[in-house]
Image (cartoon, rainbow, N blue to C red; front, side, top):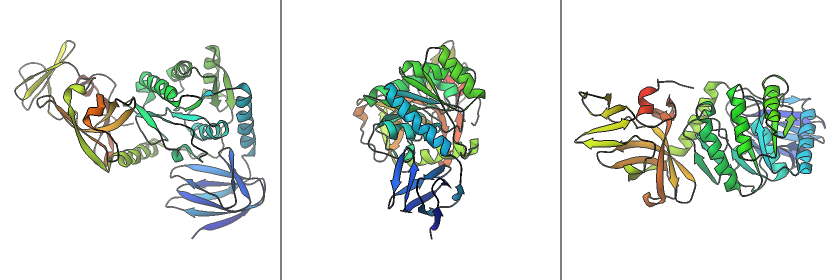
Length: 402
């Protein structure tokens, strides 16, 4: 049964998902737009969201497992500041915007506000916590109408990065973000990750410069936010400051891994096998096949894939590619996520799993990149590898979790 709350003007209702919120009377302000009486909104799991009441209202909340809510009487200063921010950016004519800030500073929430207020395409460049549902990719979604959160927006496509850490693969994130910005075909707002310390600030500057941002909105005051703003401004970028919401629900690394695990499951739990030519794989060292053995020449090192230990070279057991996230580069110009089942140079074939509903055939795939995330049972991330060519990347990186 729903729990209904009477709220006075100037109050707010903070809701932690999963939950469904119905506006039975009055109206609330959410994500830069008004939800009138009779409307409703979904708050996803592991997320917290505040609905601000502009007139006396009645809200009814249907809570899922782990969901919660509480009445709050603060936060309107942020609402007012973000509303002014939208108007300021509109007045500047800013149509290419990058949102940056530390971890859990409200970047995705503000991105949704800017999307709604300025009617912009979204570029989701947070490869580790991709709100558009494609982990390890930069996704984009043209403007199709207002949405409470980015998870409610349907992506039009994505570009493969192959890792969930911008610290490891920032150069690939920048490249994919540029492709996504071009695919938007007009104005866009880029949601980014929380990697802003040290080299992270330079990475954010490179991303903003490369997409030719009109403005970079930096969330938070002092500390990392201040240093990031200083560096961006020193490089000639237009920096706009914005306050962080004070009612965010902090997520641990376990929460973040669980979030990605759910996204992997959504992609591949209902999937089908696709058989491709092994020669389509681009990031693999040159190799020769001799019987059941494959010799990969990676610079001065030779890796030998065989059942038995070879007399010379670094020994690799067969099946080293199984479970790797992969990106299929399609003739349409976008990428499709895939999961490697088998890479067999001896048989000249690559077998991957793709989304059951993905409308693609072998002839539509013009190339493949093997990613650096390995999934195990139940789509748990078993290994994070350093980006590079295979099989060298698999042999040189120690087993790790993030």
